[in-house]
Length: 263
Image 1 (cartoon, one colour):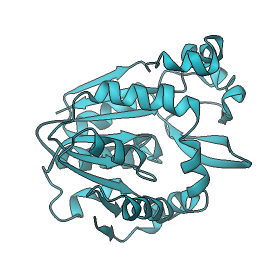
Image 2 (cartoon, one colour; image 1 turned 90 degrees about the vertical axis):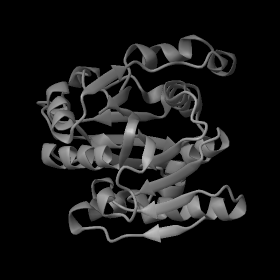
Image 3 (cartoon, one colour; image 1 turned 30 degrees about the horizontal axis):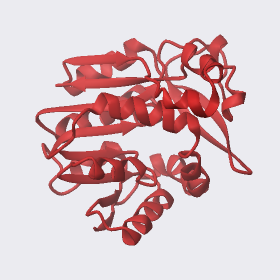
């Protein structure tokens, strides 16, 4: 295991700092039923067999999915996050239980500046990544960097803000421990503020809304040929823990969806 640090520009420092201050609380939130039975289940169902693959986990946070990818048989896993606080937690976990995962602090759009990253990875994972781009130009930059780091035949798989959700539907999530708000009108690059309960803490962070057309332009400009927007999936084990009705509001009005990009 190695931990690497690369310079972060002033343009992204505000985003980095919002997670530095809530790193542990955000990490703890990954243990919630929603994250386990919908988020993680959806992501790994879409990923499929990762045995022998070289995997880049972008916006890796505390490395929760980096570790699962390695345990699932990935030949190589590199986790990248813009937050030093998140990377510190991931490295500490790696030091406690060494799996051979490398963690790097970097902005996703600067990936091509990292040594050996161009055309290196068979699979790039981005659970909550692209919607952190503050404008369409940054979104295109991020997608371009992802595309250039994919090896021939590779793909990108992620979870992303739902581009089809209207502002009127930004409600009904209190029972899941969070809410999301934005100012009207809901246009490309509109900030969306999440408030989330983690243990006894209330944490806040900001993402950005983009419609399908903006995403399509960014994907095309980056060199992706196919973009598949896919519904969330649900692990039936969640019914045993929380009951069937508990999940209805979230699954019928999903704030996020799955995404697969192919060059």
